[in-house]
Image (tube, rainbow over all chains, first blue to last red; front, side):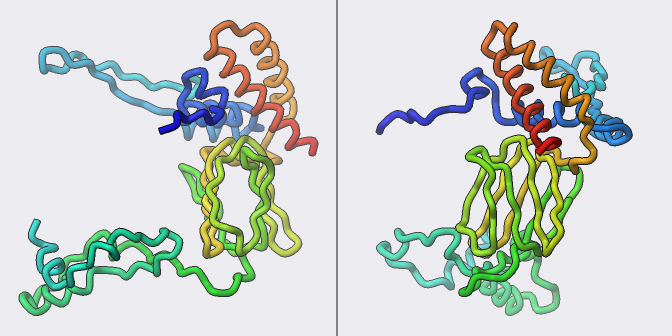
Length: 71
Length: 203
């Protein structure tokens, strides 16, 4: 079986996945919008999640994070 | 587990040679809603209760490929939070594929295209609607249906020129000062997206 020698996109060569690339593109586009569309887009994309690490089969105290899409 | 047993037993055994040649997904006839064998057998055994619906019966069957080229292209343009165009009949769309601007007319060969940040235009009669698409995919089916999916798509007049210029300058500067592969890749993406935005506004 021949090894695949297809040219990979530069972001995949740098270790990035397609989803990460696509999200970065979308964030950059959102940051270039005019008001009020910009605030609408940024509020729409806000995520809130609660993260809890588990040790010894028990969940530790959860941390509530509401990350802005800039991450 | 035994739900399909009645259906499988009633179906004749396919000879091994026939079973090996599978048709392409584009040649398959429109799928029927529901397994008719199963429904018949259910009605015989339990006539009073309606047969349970399977997920297949909720799906709309694939529209068949017409023998002559249709006059219009049906476009579904969807975003994660909204469906911009749902089964809209148009004359042509031009999508920003990674291989360049690609025009799609009715009767286009079935294609899957990855989109790069760029302008997508929808032509209907004398009207053209343009959207800037951040990235996504376009699936063109043999029956002149096109599904375009994008993460973010904005009409061109929602874009702020000064922010685009600022972003372009910032990322060009980041690209020259980037050290790791990942930083270089991110800066390159920034430069690509902002130059595409610039080209969309000036072009």
